[in-house]
Length: 102
Image (cartoon, rainbow, N blue to C red; front, side):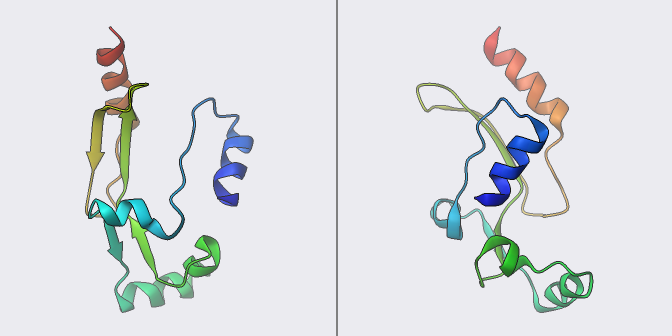
């Protein structure tokens, strides 16, 4: 959560970022993946200590995703990929927001 707060502050974001410590919510929806051993080694060789960054020793992360949830808590847009190298394109999200608000 500390990382999220720092990101919001450094980028002066006006949207709310949600946090899911321990991936508890993502786990309920089947949206968590575990790093394979070979990838753990690569990350550590590059100085990326995921357990330290996430304060979680599991080497598990939620799948890259972006959601638009309205004030009635209805999911209006969702884009999820099981491939951690594939990230939602911001232009798709902006288009979805425009469509929802028009």
